[in-house]
Length: 308
Length: 308
Image (cartoon, rainbow over all chains, first blue to last red):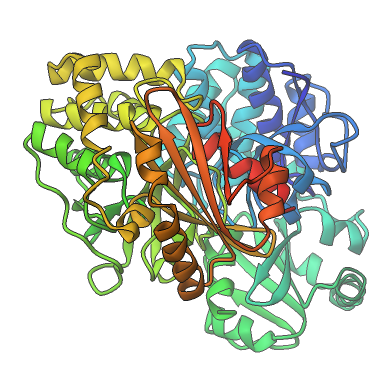
């Protein structure tokens, strides 16, 4: 078997980056010539985790075929969230915790998805199934991903299994889970020195819904008003991105990680679909979604249904 | 959670039927109100296995929504191989060993695919992961599926894991693996009293390839000449099915389970794609494919590539 590249989704979050690292380490122990790479630069939260656990960020690629035909995907499966040449590659394995869509292979493969809060919760199980020891730094990175994806267990996507996994990994990593977790999350909320484009791109994903192309971004903050103070500039940037990339609708989810509510900002066509999805009315293109923190569980299915 | 229906693909083979039974039993032990059903009547091989291990055939359904919205799929994932209303259902789990295509969910789910020879090899692992004991009759049915899918370990889809699983299940089922296996396979090769339609439908599946709809059937036999003696009648029936169901191409794979070769019979458009796929020339719509016994590994990927 030649080299295998392992990567998470575009606009990588902490789970996308660290799942590539942890799954590549596992594959190497199993004899696979694996390398973790990333489909974008790391955000500040991930940089904080990598720095704490003294691990280098994976190198960035956008396509794979020049290097290898064999890849493994973590934390995503939809083609539009992957490398640009995914259709020409052989996907050997997927470890994911999202819905399955726009994913197709010619051959049987290893696919492991579970409806848990974080890809690394599944990867922890895989380490156990193969009886491979997890190094301290990789345990710390896996823990960081669970904290990030579940917002320190506050997200409705969080399961008992995620909490158990986080506690187990915190013990191996030798950190105080709550204290480290809050520090790491706060490191990711420093939005003031970011451009509008950086805010929109930092964790945005595209979703085909009905026959429309919907872009959904999400930023975490401890101060929603600070983000909304830039509404006019954000809308201009969202309109530009819609035009440039063919998005029909752009939804930016601004999530307050302290009180676990979100404000949405909506630009593009079919705004009434957004109102239908969340049974709300947009005022000046915005609406408050009480208790909404999870794009995957509280935004994407509702919008998908409204676009049917 | 309300009732969950569990089923394998249309035109069920032994793995499709018994994986539904074995996975439903596991789910019931885990507290799920599960029922194994089937998307067609059992073939003679499966009937032999069910009879040997004193288990009733699952009742047949074609759609599920009238009974429940919640389903689990075994031994398939492609929509056109499933219940007719699959797009309106919530797929909670999939256990499969095929390629992934034409499969989409709105929500995260449990998906367990591994590139092994049989779904029941994976289900055996799930029993172990949950530390659930396998009843003797279910072990016998799971064993029957592995023998069927791997043609008693002769298929290139067969892995070391399938062989280990079969030996383990044979011990629980208290049968002689080789002797029982050959008897069961032979029970499935009694083709003489079947109509052409029954031969074509017994294990046929549809595959979208490029923008074409390709139907691929497979029959196992110990006497290929006996099947080819009916070529004219088979071609007439294949043409009728193409017309009626919108298949662009029908490929019937006639597999000799003793010498592990296959003869193909081809009716419809794009015959040159078949020649390209197998680097052969059709003579009177037929060709011999030496060493080919696995549709999944030796027919579907090659045809898919040729239709690209």
